[in-house]
Length: 305
Ligand SMILES: [Mg+2]
Image (cartoon, rainbow, N blue to C red):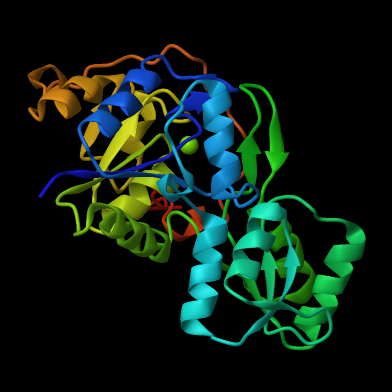
């Protein structure tokens, strides 16, 4: 069976509204070779159709809605599978609203089964309504654990994890976080990949730039995990994590030749790469779930006083 790929977008295919060098040839090789692939993103704001248009404008034609799986779709899949007939109060953008609508999950601002939190759309008025719903018994569900999302190399915006954390603080209830690294995200993406390939590809490779979501989720789901250095992770910091990528690549361009030829490239056997872009240091965890698997060892308690 052919290898299948799950591919993160920001920091892997594009960065700051610019395609990563070699991304066009990489995607062309995937399409030309008939390799099954899906772009996997924690961003719950866009629909798959929005994403295919966005990539077309960036210079990647030939992609359709079936090539994308978002945390919004994952949330709608989760609710319709685990709680048919449930109702929701939503704080989120079009991609999340459309996914829930397509699964016939009804909105309810009075007594919903869940408050569902995605990217954007938060206002104090909506947060107050969501807070009241949770106080009345609604469960809190977030599309993904990202506290912040990169807008450019110097700018960020608040993510769904930050909105969920607000409601956790105000209600004292813990949220459940879907999206990467949650195994349900990888489970359903694998299913979509199998539908596309008319059979489950083997092996399945996750390509991502973020250790806490892409690499951790892939490892925990039994997939191969390829880290690319075009995004948020520098090679020097990889050793700080308990979970490790199965392969480290400079960029997706390093895979193009082996996808074309079907032969692994020996050039990639010694991952002695350098990443020149300066990484910003930020206080706090990037994702609400990062604390479950702290990547840095705790300092050992002093043996004597
Ligand atoms: Mg990324």
